[in-house]
Amino acid sequence: MKIILKSETSLGLESFEELGFNSEEELELEISKLIKFRSEFDTSLE
Image 1: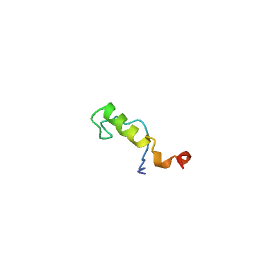
Image 2 (image 1 turned 135 degrees about the horizontal axis):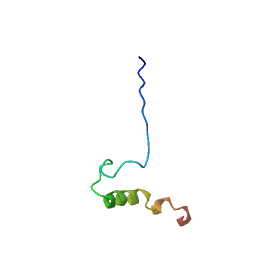
Image 3 (image 1 turned 90 degrees about the vertical axis):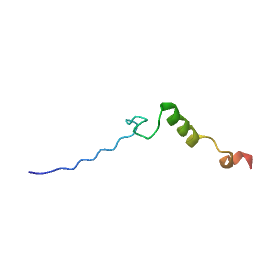
Image 4 (image 1 turned 135 degrees about the vertical axis):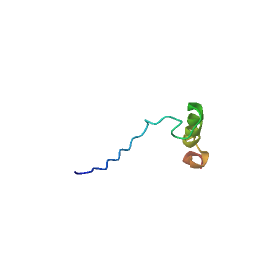
């Protein structure tokens, strides 16, 4: 008998609980922190 180990990776299918957040709002807040514009990266200010 042949045993096959199959590992699948998917993005976006896990619930917020599985990702370690208490609510969808908490997850969205953390995402917004990650994508927030940072002025130190704005090249037009220099």
